[in-house]
Length: 298
Image (cartoon, rainbow, N blue to C red; front, side):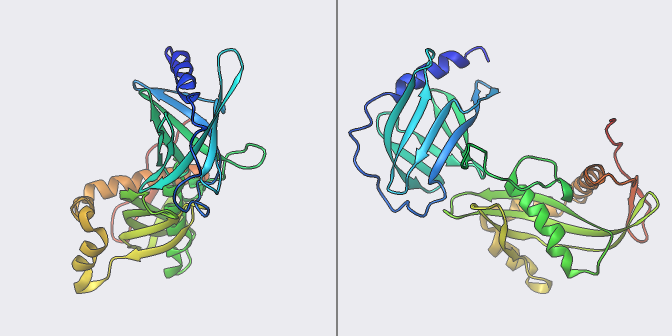
């Protein structure tokens, strides 16, 4: 990135302003998940991004104080003292830099001088915090919150049905709310289809739709609760209660059978690939087989 060096140098200068005059932190942050050490993962600027190898380190202490450190172009480490307090969707630091960090699931993000810095939490030894791998459930992305939803559908909701060879979820996320301190609220249209393998065909034997809101723990990216829309005559009123202002967005996808079918086809194709299956089709009872997308070449 052509402007990376200039941005980092300017950022380092901003962060060396006198923050030490700040007193203790404000608010009760002792039990916050943000307590700990965070390291830079990525820098984004003007539509471009570049990976960072721990160029900056943010340490947040349980008493509301902390440090922000980085290295200048001469290899000299610069350390600024700071205080921090919680906001509705993350936290902010006090001092001349006045950094505001937004919660992004497994990461925190701040913008300084037009550049966006993405941090991930470090464990002892500097390793990044563990995330949920969604590939066994048909999700190959890098969002641990979304991966947790796939896992929950495949391993927990599938228990509502008789055992099958493969349990494959289809997950459409309508909205994600990071504002609660200890959890992420994931509003979505969640489906599970269970298949038996017959040759190169996945034959559907059971399944169902479970729209609602999943509660995902920020501590370990696991689903701790699932608010599901009620069945029967209370379905619509229950959906409005759970989805609130996101009800129309939910219904737009829920009623779009073409979009649902396409998402299912993509997910089943990914599942087959990630789990090294030989299937080339899936088939619902009474319907023609649906051909999956070609698998990528090795």
